[in-house]
Length: 417
Ligand SMILES: [Zn+2]
Image (cartoon, rainbow, N blue to C red; front, side):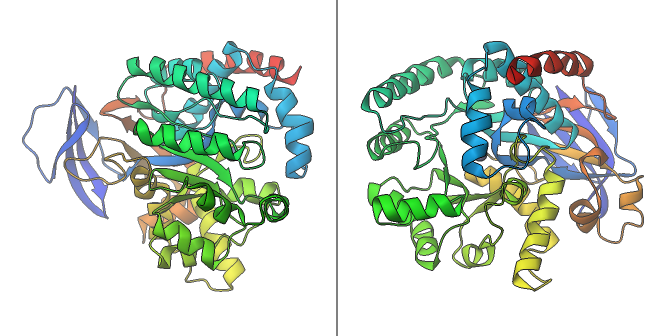
């Protein structure tokens, strides 16, 4: 399959883009090539597809189910009991709904930290997105549960051998308050031995930080450092409760960090995300939308705007996290974190692209396309989405949309109980 996008705005200039197979092959004006499909890019701007670096996809079914509670109560009273009601069906339709929402708002790749990877795989591969999937590991400090988690992870990795190249298995211990030191170490060794990405929640709430000091005598980052699990293939979600020493440690090990502004604000985990200090140390910071129980949508344009405004506000400095850096956070930094040759509109890169409709009020006038995308637009301005060289949405049409919505409504009834 080959695609030619004619006359589209790239970096504020019109160009053609030729995609063949899964790659961007040629970029230039007036390309003389034959293509299976031609897309008219007039009054559209091309951007790399967003990389949602921390997601719990099937939690779309939890949207509006547990509002306005602190993290511990939110997890223990609402989320974990509802998660116990998950079936293969709820994971499948919840993940399909998440993929639909992500396609409609410009995300081409996501890091899914959830359960029942077989069902997640089926849903994501049908929708055509790129993803990391996992079966999140917990042991609650019980050795028997740790052994079960290990066997489950080994088994899942074997099953993942048949996955399409667009979907990779990863290792994801839940958090330091739900996973023992022993299981954390095993997870890191397993990830390393099998060349897998590892991902966890860390330093999310004040309570987690204080318990870490009380239980381990160390900050969450220093605790993981002591366990010997820090490495370039590790990405950490949230990361609000960290100090300068922690940041230096993260930089030394080239650990990646995921910022989750919506979820952090809504659960009131904190807002003083130390982007500037991390940037100065060269740490790769990407953007995640977390689950829909705490961020309520998966629109990365909203994430970019919030991330940028938050930096400006808590620093009392409007120069912080400018629009281009917010865009990088949502695209190329995520691609780097998950070792994917994407995140830039460039020859030889994966054809994971979005076309934005410039004929919208939020892009009028268009003095600065990136500023309009980050500060003015929302995800509904995404007109067309291409992932791995395949068109998943064109002129806002996604195949099978109504079936997904109807089935997700039914599946949400199971979750509600
Ligand atoms: Zn999360």
